[in-house]
Image 1 (cartoon, rainbow, N blue to C red):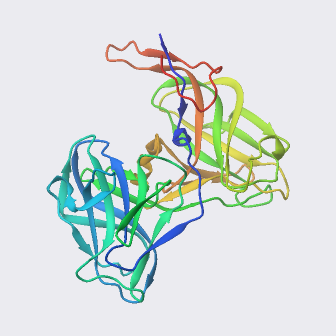
Image 2 (cartoon, rainbow, N blue to C red):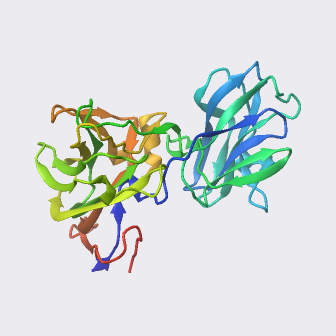
Image 3 (cartoon, rainbow, N blue to C red):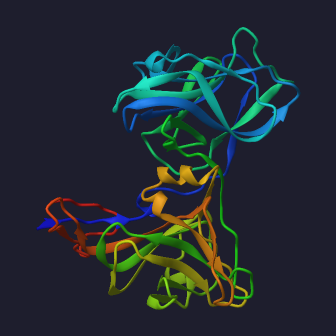
Length: 358
């Protein structure tokens, strides 16, 4: 018998919240933005993604690539990784860009790498012709980490940022995100209920949920768990928002518990927040990705997606959006190779948010 403490779903990525979006001007040949990470698998990285917030004038082409990390942890932009070569790219429109590497990087799992966009030293951008790249907007983290360069020096950010890499099999590693937001809604709005549609790869019992709120809220609501036929399996009522209000205006992760219910592998479920207040609003943290495949970076992102409805009507799903939610699970039955399966028991006495394996 294995003992596991687990929160399962996108919100199991601890510390995710939205900071104010901050941009970095790459208006000289010694300015850059990079995402430093450990390669999750071996393979061929053939594209780098970046979000451009604004374009001033007519910038020259920029250098984009995947590089080794130097001894100090900063990108070594003189050393393209895995036999790759720096790609020249001309940003002409704002928004998300995937830059295909003409000579891709062949990497090993565990390689310390950096995906970077920088001004070209030979034909540098200047104060009248440059791009603003989105630098910060996603939570406090350590590794992977964002770094920015100005006047030739690299500085660390406590943030993921908006940079990602893509392998030639389509797997995305990093935040290929075009927005992180929440739409304030109350009982009179359209929609008035919002959450995630999901499936599970194993049978289990669910006894709670984790929900990320984008900002302070002032209305009552319910956290609901539905089956595919819209039967309510579990509900937690929050009649007073002060019961779960966060310390400030920059978001809060709430933990909600209910009597344990059985969930079955492969079936469709929905975890939602439904407003029960006529005017008091709530807002669920959501990420909008450049494409459905990019959700996979989030834990179990391939199995979770946005869903909403109004006045208990028909559901509307959105493949490119992912609310920040997760489940508290116990008695997970994971099929084994001999057909018997492994049973994992979750002990609710362990403090929320601390995964323990023993």
